[in-house]
Image 1 (cartoon, rainbow, N blue to C red):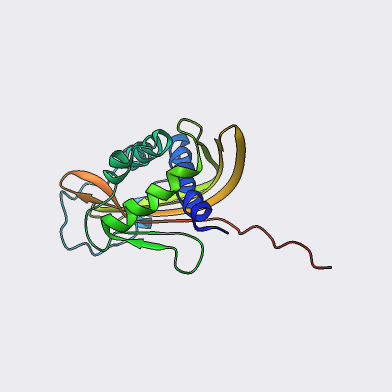
Image 2 (cartoon, one colour):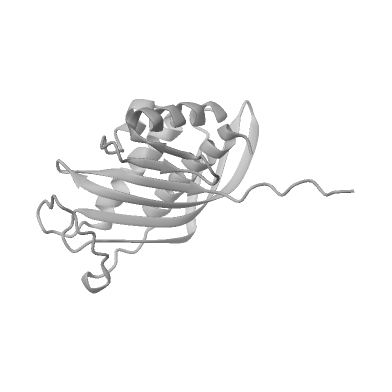
Length: 185
């Protein structure tokens, strides 16, 4: 699968996840919350699912608009922030590499054509300190380039961390099944 398509799939997966989270999701109860051991806790208030959805909605809108600055605003600027795709070598760490990946991703579709639906499956939760949260979803995506429509399914997982009062992605993983090889004769 070409690197551009993989990057696009990763981004689209995130968009689907965002759309799915917009439609609803689960925020685990305090007893089911995942402990993160975050070293810089802010107020010990568990986030609402709406707060987590808001970062996903901002990313999804920016991706659909092909607005790189707005996409990057949804990510932590920490040098360990990472976006991962499906295959070997599909890892972009730090703001410069992540921006480079998105620069390629947005070349594969026309602005305003990205549609995501994560209603198939989604889940999420947060730590007890209210400083770290996670989401996971399977999303059906659709976009087009010069009138040629493309549909695909992505699995998306993301971790967000509260930084200076705002939720930011610290990790994002989007993957899709590769196209099967052509039959052999």
